Length: 248
Image (tube, rainbow, N blue to C red; front, side, top):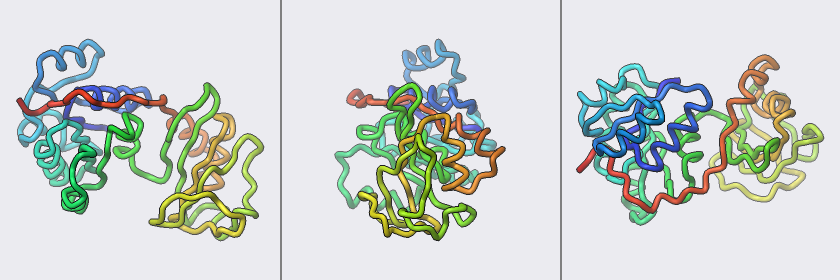
């Protein structure tokens, strides 16, 4: 997949690294000279300019991108970049600082695909937001263990089961469960699994493909190919420094 990320500060650059490690193509947009050099030193293509300007995003390849991640600390730049990305049919992910009032959050949330708080989520949250879909890597907690959130699909073999009937591989266990559009909570045995419900699972990498087949309905070939792409490094960064890619 192809991504345009506006802002090469800590959030943007770490998100770009996580995505590139999974085989995706990344183009960064940044105005700060030092950040441009840092990103280029890590072999990222960087377009110098204001990420809220359409010609700059066009130069970065927004016409062919799958998603735009507006990850600067400037809300106006981020929102404008997302509107441009939406115009070109991209998935749009906008960074917003936790300090903003809930009313402002709701105003923008209706107009972009996903809003993230990098102070809470770090690069892994931004990456998941950009990818979208039914599988979200939450954390690698050991060299062979990963926590993932999976969304039950209509094609899942376990659709219609209760949690007591669910039989995961030996090296996988359910940590949390959430009905469609409801918060995650501690699972109960009589909870039913239906299209759109979410399960948070701790699993060994060796059984991730089997878990994906059961809960998402991927074919064995798809699950084997995709199991590795759910991997991402634990990110505990707290982006307290200002990221101003795209603005002075």
